[in-house]
Figure (tube, rainbow, N blue to C red):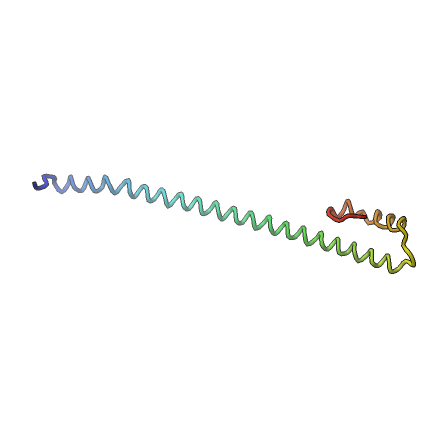
Length: 105
């Protein structure tokens, strides 16, 4: 049995199949682009936060190193350091207020 469809009918059928397919591909490409951009923004935000955290940690470590060196200097400069003198010295450094994470004991 031969096809009785005219070339116009066959063209309309092809267009009817291709249009939804092309629209689906365009939609998928647009969705992928939005997803990729969101991922890039998330990565950039993470990198900014990581850089900030590293900067804060470096600053704290520098402060703590300074406190340790000053304690060493205090011990070497004094003939003897008793508990009370050390307590007064450490309280004057205000380590608890300035450098969270360092025990002042």
